[in-house]
Length: 176
View 1: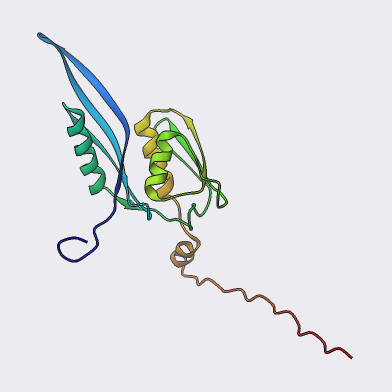
View 2: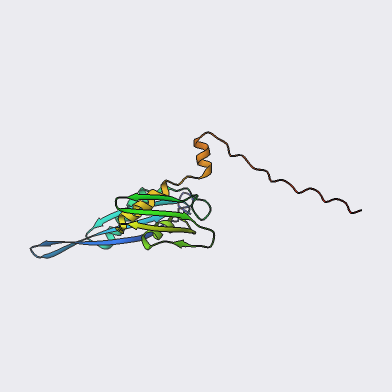
């Protein structure tokens, strides 16, 4: 509970990748760090941020703040996704397929961090092309944002979902 009586969001923060760069100066090398962070509430919201600083801890903190400010909602169907989707970002290509309950998250570490932050529990994935962590994460996020539920598609077309009634079995005939 927050100070104003409302529930505060439970956000999970995952460090996907930390990069170190070196600049050679008169006295030696100066190092800078960049951290790719994924933040999610495990209920369909996720954000990605890149933080840069001269210390690892500062870059992680900056990346987390950037990810929190850029959170977006994703369409989910129970613990998986509504349909298969393909997306690419620069050289990274991602294929996401819904899976039956109990399958788990079948994904590499960069894709897995995004999917677990969203709250997906059953999914099949394949990462193709570049394995640059930043591009793979952005391609995964692009794929998740292109998902649409059946209700959302019907609503955008101005249609109503018809409920299908199941036929009832005829009553048993009385024994003679």
